[in-house]
Length: 584
Image 1 (spheres, rainbow, N blue to C red):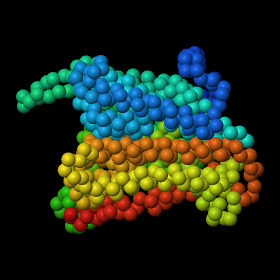
Image 2 (image 1 turned 45 degrees about the vertical axis):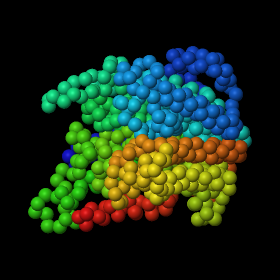
Image 3 (image 1 turned 60 degrees about the horizontal axis):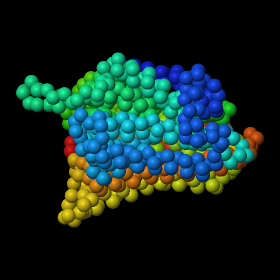
Image 4 (image 1 turned 90 degrees about the vertical axis):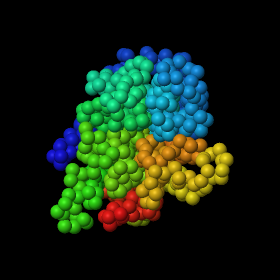
């Protein structure tokens, strides 16, 4: 098991490393408007879209116009998704005759897919029709991912350009990200998934009898096409409730491996895109190295905790419970097809990125094993992260790192030839604090709030009665729900009944805050940086393309996350770990 897990981990990372440069260079050509091998096919379609939409591709926008375009596009698509979800019972392609979603659930779902979170408070097989899955949800998987890439590219232009107030054109970046990057990769991956056994049909649900004679309904649907963009766009919303643990979504070990590769593929490549666009590929590899360092630390911690297991289940003959290991590791909540190694790797990858797809139950992990996915999201999902979101999140920390380094040596902080001044630091800190507040404030409120009889927003009693477990584990369930929402991850820790007006509304608001109240300050940073002149490198300039900066940047990411969330983590998974060691 150990040798298999190590081989899989190393093969996974090596393939990501090999694909980062060619895909990253391709995306740099796309967003710089240069010709690519896809232009003969996609360029006529791109021009047609501009003509029909009235877009002038040569007209660039200031950061305020770019942000306004992003918000307008997101608002319109959110409303359309809400309407489809509410009235899906009246719409076609609904062989299971599923009725419309409730207002609060439709709001939560529309917000979730608009913000690239794909949190699902519902059971997809019984709550979403084929029409909703394809027109409302799968299309959002493309558009929300493309919007994230567009924002990252705009921020990169802020570093790459000088003495201008323009950061690009949102509509052009959105179109190119969809046509040249997401769509071709999704078509290719969907065909591979279909070859692995992922189903793709419009058949009515199948009714069968089990061996015991009990009736069972087996969901069907166009899964392969949605599965591809679900992973490539780091969306994560499953066609089935079991998500990537379901054999229709993830039928083979090879499919499982390809899904993990798809999650990291574009976020990793964007680091090289960054290096190309700023004219220094070493800067891109520095970000890649920082992300890789944090990734290996996380997957090692999760794997070790799950392989160690629960000492209460250690085999007889071990003298000390404190040093005993569970034979075979902790297999609770894991697919026997994948085991501990593939499950913990998947859990780490999906929460390092803002994907949220799962092939095991995080609720069943050991306390420290479950701590890793939780912390991955709380760090801002900058360990490769979501498509676009990982890059702009790591650049946010890079600005913070050079500012801290400047304070330590008494010099004006610089990054890529740009002075990092008061405005940039304020905007970055606003983005950091907003996400932290959208996690901790609703978590704390939900932990203490109680509802009277007849309340429309929640059944009578305390909100924490929706939790599946008491004590520290229950706190982890609650904290994970709002962390997943605010971090736009969408993975569910499990054990919490979140489909009530209270949780649907509050997690929906957390998703909006975590997405747009982070993006807008960073677009402001892009606009500010683009207007600055380039500063020549001097003896006092901190090198930001070497091992020292990798360690500094990784340290800032970890320290900011630890200082912000450590008290809550100490009351949840950390105290639960010591309870487990104590036999509780």
